[in-house]
Image (cartoon, rainbow, N blue to C red; front, side, top):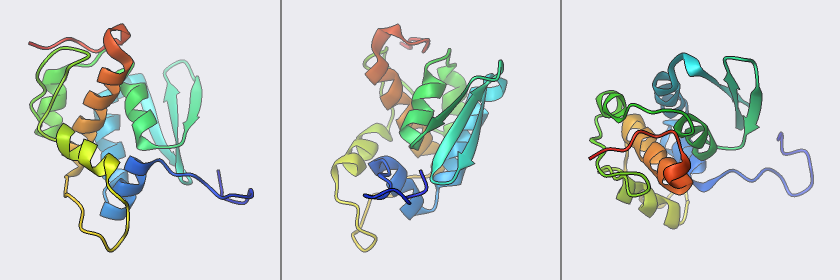
Length: 147
């Protein structure tokens, strides 16, 4: 976790983008707000801890995994839209939001501090992560289907 091991730390691509864009902690704050009291999200070095109300704790390497943990429970997509400014449409596993294509572009693009990159707000980034996580998990998630 600290990078002391040979080979260093591998940071997930979307988490690296959030760090380069300066929105890492803001995205985590949005994910925490969406999770409510169900989960507690905290920074842990370059990683994250996610703790449920019963005390079970996970150390997760990136914001993608934090979003997956949040999306694993019941989500009120209207609340997600209200908190992030992103209207979520469709049904799991085909949810969509305006930020999702931009997030997918970021995931596929090279991450150089000097290279131009698409801009997303913390809310847009969080909504895209949640939609992506819910779609990857498929219909087995607790995500509420949308019309």
